[in-house]
Structure formats: structure tokens, C-alpha cells
Amino acid sequence: MSRTKTAETIENVEFPSFDASKATDQMRAFAEKGVEQSKEAYAKLKTGAEETQKALESTFETAKTVSSDLSLKTISALRANAEAGFSHLEALIGAKSLSEVVELQTAFLRKRVETTVEQAKDFQAVASKAAEDVSKPIKTAFEKAMKEIKVA
Image (tube, rainbow, N blue to C red; front, top):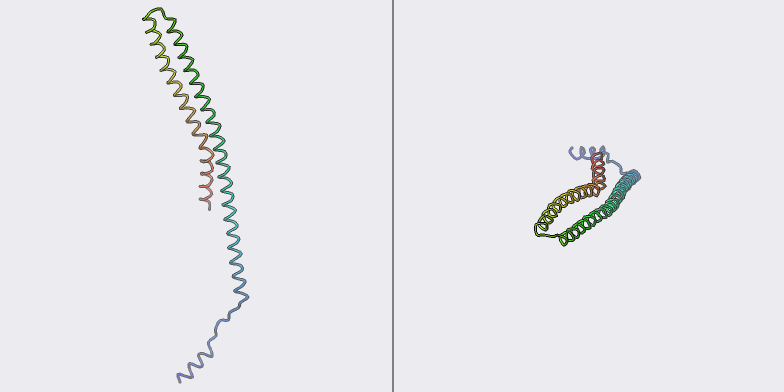
């Protein structure tokens, strides 16, 4: 009895048929989807790289301009300091007494301290603006990338 029952059960069981054409279609669709996703990822990567390159180029141009401005400011300060020194030396040579030399020297040192403080403030302002200008393109690109990451 158990043998006949087993034979009947085996005859009644249906095995799923394997359709190769459906499997091929599914594999093709899967591969096409993978290729499409790869193309999209590549396009995003390429766009990001191009934007980064533009930001870096802009940063380098700004740095070049800013360093030129800083150099000119430095040269101007050095020239003013040298002229002040030579003028002071001429005044010292023309002094008639020791008290006049002391008076000239005191006035010169006071003026040098004031000028140095002014020059330091100017350099600080120029350097702060330079740092801001140089970092602005990179900062903008970074913020844009972060927004795109949040959206994705």
C-alpha cells in the first residue's frame, strides 16, 4: 500500500518547468539596469569632478590675485618705512644740539610705532579678505556637494 501511494504521489507531483527564454530576458533586464545605473553614477562623478576642477581653478586664480595685492602692499609699506628712515637720518644730520637729536629720535620712534600699528591693521584686513576670497569657491562647491548628497 505504501508503495502504490508513493507511486501515485510521485505521478501527481508537478515539477516547475524551466523556461530558458524567460531567464535570459530577466538576466538581460538585470544587466541593462546595471549598465544604466553605472552610466548615471559615472555622469554624476564626472560632473562632480568638473565642478571641483572649476572651483580649484577659481581658487588658484584668486590666490594669485590676492598674493599680488599682498606683495604690492608689502612693497608699499617697505618703501614708506625706508623713506621715513632716510628722512629721519637727514633730520638727525641737520640737528644743532643733543637735545634736538633726542627730540627728533623720540618723535621718530613714536611715529614709527603708530605707522607699524596702522600697517599691521592694514595687513590683517588684507589677509582676512584674502583668506575669505581664496576659500569662497571651495566652500561654495563643498556646500553644493553636501546639498546634492542630502537630496540623494
